[in-house]
Image 1 (cartoon, rainbow, N blue to C red):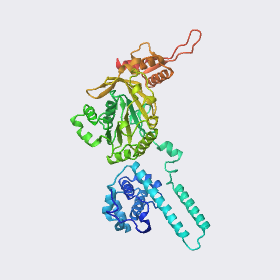
Image 2: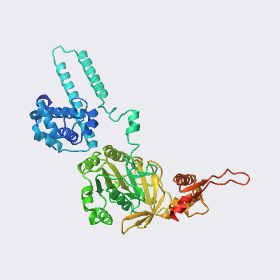
Image 3: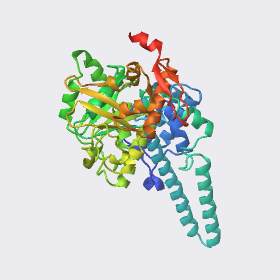
Image 4: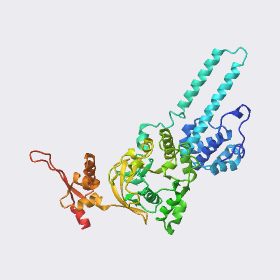
Length: 500
């Protein structure tokens, strides 16, 4: 981090020597803006006017704004030329200082919070200056208390109105108009894992994989990570979007995590893993509930757009404190706002670990405060016995349509997971000459007596087969003296011919 003792002019002395400021935050924001000009759009409404303490930084900031307004590059080479033309280059510390600033790079999410620090310090300096002037006026001969009080109130009112009207205040920072919210917030982005109709992991929302020890959470997560790195295109026959770089926080038994990954790694993968995967081994410098900026800062420091937290219990001080859970959710959101995708591995409550296989779990079986799952975008729950290759995936919290339940089989030698074809509706209907009703399919899928929700879910799956041309639908009729007849679905001729 550039120091105010190194390059660049020193801060103004005099009465402002004790004024609040944070030069490290100023350097970080300017460096992020040089690295990525779009960061300027993010921090500009936060900073407002005259926010930088060091005059040289204010000059550089105005040069950055000028370049951004004309959609021109903001790198230090271009800025050097601009400032030299303006006659400001020597005053801001010469080209060496600009390059030093450019080497300080944080993500857009971190830049937002650094800009908040700069803004708060600037507001404090304005309040301090107003207080000093008030003291000076009060010490003048014949000072009028009422006049001073009225002037102070007017200054405070002007300061508050300025902060609110400029858009830099906390009431405006995340506000946007309705059209922008609907069209640009990301509702139409492609999922990271799954399809738009059935999304396991949505962009901008965290995915939490929950289960007892030994049921294959890590095995499943590693397959998603390797797919994000481009070593495969699908996991459980669902597409996975590529990632630029993954930061894997191996806080829980890193040696076992390495052994599990090794099952999927070949010599030909060396370059991809060296360039695309960074693994943090052991505990973090601080828990995320204590340092909410740490997650975003880690992603920025390692240039990662995806973070895997393995496991959640090792990232926070305690799992049962609601206030700490909310603090972790803030850390999660700060990283997500910076464009970082998050995958979390977590445990279920011990008392529920021996539930029968196939029995649908619930969110209250996730260990710890309910705020952890409340803030997650998607929750995938793995049920089964420790070490058992056959487990069931339940999608308890869904961004779009529910996926599964899916009966899957882990290959512990190869580190892969495959779907059980006997629970695939397309296979089941193809193997049913007399067709299937929604209730019959639901009974097979859950392995028992289905409830109304199970039947409706099965009906939607059968309707999707009809829409895709793999099935036909014979409508039933309502009950009467002779009883009703349920709607029945049959494999289409196209489906039978395709496999026959």
